[in-house]
Image 1: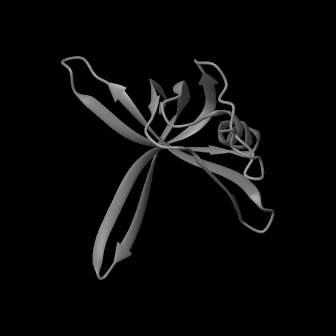
Image 2: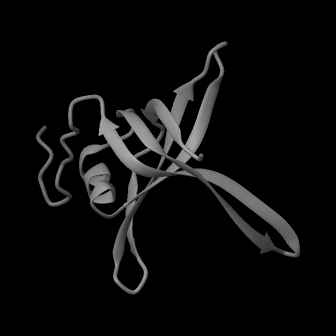
Length: 111
C-alpha cells in the first residue's frame, strides 16, 4: 500500500501549469511539515485537474494544508548520471486556513 497523509504549510506560492495535449491543469507546491523531535521535512507536492486549479486559486505561501496522496519516484539521467526524486501526488488537498484573497494582476494597489 502506498499512502501518505501530510500536514504542513506551503513554503512558496503554488505554480499552476497546463501539460500534455489536453492542457491538463497541474499544480506544484512545496510543504514544510514539522516532525517529532523538532526537525522540519520539506516535500514537493503535485496536484492535478480540479484540485490543481483550486490549489492555485486559494493557496499562497504559508497556507496550512492537509495532503492525502501517494509517493511517486521520478527517474532520469543527466550528463550520464542517474538521478531520482520522490514527491507526493495528491489525491486530495484540504485547506486548513482561511482562503487566500489573491489580488488581480490588473487591480490597483491602494496607498
